[in-house]
Every structure is written in C-alpha cells, then in structure tokens.
Length: 554
Image (cartoon, rainbow, N blue to C red; front, side, top):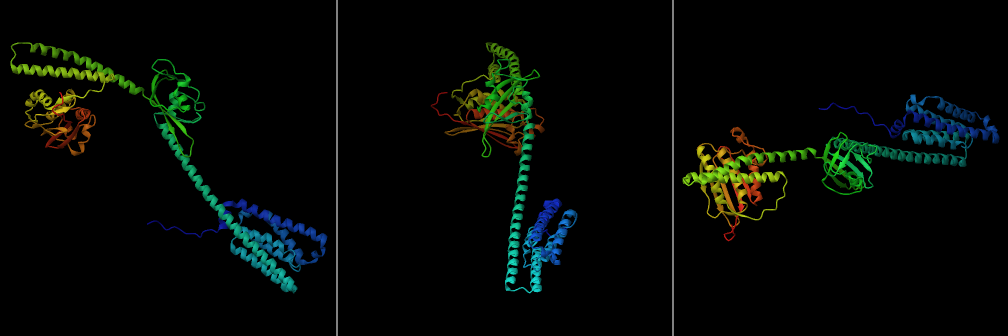
C-alpha cells in the first residue's frame, strides 16, 4: 500500500499569479499603484490650494492627505518581498480610509479617488477582500451622510458613487480573472510546446546517434542541393569538413579500379544534389590513406507533409564483399583445376579398361558406373567454375527426363555403399515416370537424397523408393527407417549449414548443405519438395515434379 500523501489547500488564483510573478513583481506593483495614487492626490492638493484653500482648515481633509503621503512613503521604503502577501493589503485599505477622510463634508468630491484602491484590490486580491473594500467604502459614505445630515440629492449622489465603484470593481475583478485564466492557459500551452520541442529534439538526437552508429555513409540534401545532414561514417569515408561538405576532401572517386577519375558532375554527391535518382552505382574511392575502397551509392527521395522534399544519398563500403567474391572465384578455380586432373586420369583409365575384350559383365558394369560418375563430376566442376566467374548462361530449354531411369542409375551407384552398411534398397516405381526437367540436375538431387538416407539409416534398416503418377504430376517418395528429425528442426534443415539435433548426436559427419541444395534443384525444375520425419522412426522425402504426356519427345 502506498503511503498516504498530505493534502494542502489549493492556492487561490491571485496567490498562484503572485507566486509566478515573484517577490520582485509584487514590490513593483505596490510601488506603481501607490505612486499613481500619491501623484494624483498631490496634483489635487496643488489645485485645492489655488482654488479652494479653505479645505486645508478641515482636519479630516488634511489627515486624509497626510495618510496617503505616509502610505506612499511606506510603499517605497518597506521591503514587501520579505513580508507575507496579506501585509500588502494594508496599503489599499489604508488608502480607502484616507480617501474617506478627504471626502467627509465635501459631497464626495474626492470620492472618485476610491477607484484606485478598489481597482488595485480587484486586480490583485481575492473576492472576499474586494467585498470588504466595498463594504468599507459604503460604511464611510453612510457615516458621512449621517454626520452631515445631507438631503435627498446628496444621498442620491452617494448612492451613485457607491454603485459606480461597485460596477468598476466587479468588471475589473472579472476582467482580471479572465486575463489570469488566459495567462494560465498560455503558460500551459507554452509548457506543452516546450515539452513537445524537447521530445522532438530528443528524437532528433537519438536519430542522429543511430545514424552515426551505422557503418553506412548517409548524406541528406535539400531540393536546392544544400547539405542538411551528414553522419560520421560519410564524413570519415570521404575525409571532408562538415562546414564545407561541398568541397571534395582528401579522396578521389574513380569509375573503375585504377581507371579514370570521375569528373565533378559525375560524382554521386553532385548527382544527388541535382536530384538524380540512381541505385547501386559502383564507384572506386582512393582515400586519404592511400587505400582503394569499392562503394555502392544509391539515392532515395524523402517526401514529407510538413517538410520540404529532400534527397538521401546512401553510400555502402562493399570492398570486403568484392574481395570475398574474388577469393571465392580463386578458390573455385583452384579446386576445380586440382580436381580435374585426377578425374581425367580416372575417366581415361576406366575407358581403357572398358576396351579390354576379356572383361566379365559384372566388371564391365562397374567400370561403366565409374566412368559415368567421373563424367558427371567433370560437368559439376565446370558448372561451379562458370558460376564462380559470374558467366551468363542462357535459360535452359525445356527438357524431359525419365525420373525412374535416373533413380535406377543412382541406386546402382549407391548399392555397394548400402550393402556395406547392411541397408536394403527397395525400388517400387511405376513404369511411366517422365517429368519436365533437366536430367543432370535431377540426378544431383536424387544422389543427395539417397546419400543422406544411407548415411543416417542404421545397419539393418530399409530405404524404400516409391512413386505415383497423375495427369499433372509425378510424385516420388524416398522413405527410410533412419534416425529421423525432430519437429522443431524440420523447417530449418533447409538453411545453409544447419544440422538437425539427431544428426549432430549421431556423430555422423556432414556440412548441413544437402537439403538446401536438393530443394533448390527441385524448385528450379518447377517441382516441390516435402519432408516428413519422426525421431527414431525415419524420414520420408517427397518430390513432386511436373509430369510429361506420352507424346512429348524425350
């Protein structure tokens, strides 16, 4: 339970206003209002001395003037900011009494001075103080009427004065409260605007920090080409000064590596400043440290309802990516070259051995399998090498393959391995299994499926290959009785380098690439691949390929 909070009475409007204006404001208001009244009385005294000096013989008139002068001196001398607020009210109430003394016996000719303290109280004090002031004025008027036994006309004059003061007091009080409420509303709005400004400024700082934390160079340019913002990466990449971003830094941009430098109009920054839109423009940058950097420059147009249109220049440093691509090409070329030599020897000796007339049928069949496998390996190496070099290849023309014949050939290749592991291979394929696809690529997929099935099936297990044919599809099932895959790993087995938990626990070596390659090949041929598995029971790989009618030439 939260501790109880002390509750204090809410301050009045005038008190809150006085707190906001501060003690200095209170002192200034006392000086100003009292000085105005004192000056008005002094001017009146001078006029009375010229026009009607006999009034100075009245003790009440002289006493009233003396009190006003004394209160003016007190207002100037007293440090009001050190006194409580209620002490200030003594000045206007004293003025009311002083003006009453000046008005006694004069038919209220000086009663108009009551406007000054009444308006003062109506402006700066609560309603109770205003009512008290009006009651005091009314009492003074009633006392004067009683002492001087005035007639009906004088009584009417007194009533008019009192009503006029009341009207002025009420209007001044209401106007002051409205003004104070409006000021409070403006203060609240100002606080809200200040809070909004602080939040926006904070968001801008956070965005700036985020942009500066990126390893991508970013420059924001106005529609007139003026630089609006630069992040730290862009400044460091180009070695420019933030104060003069238009001037090239200690770097030079080239169209190609060690080629011709870009002219000023061809630089990505200048093009973006002109409002050009481009994507993944490659340039080479020779930086101030004497290093070459490959950059990918792009622009994005920024359109906002409350801001002018601007352009965002995004610069990626792709040097590491290009270097990795080159390293991959060199590796692929080296591996391909080193593999071709022994494969050439294998295929050559297999062909020579096949030329021998005294071969038994079984040996000839084995040599033909070796020669065919070597030729397929050579073709795979050629494809890897071409892909690594980025060679453009024409789209393959539609082809037709006999899936049953391809699987039968793959089974012949894997049968010795399956026999050595005491794994039974059972083929139950229908006769017509012609599909639309590249036979060479399908052989790759089927080899990978059979290799995985044999690898992860324990001794004494079974691998069953079955199928069914519909007018649209040929459906092939590769079912094994292997270690299986957990349900949570089924979707991830297609991710590169991912190996299921059962595969890792079996201690059987693997790269985690096979299933991804299989699905990629099947989808390239317009087919689909599905996987069902249960740990300890086995795995079924289903390949669905588009069927081909009998009248389609093979």
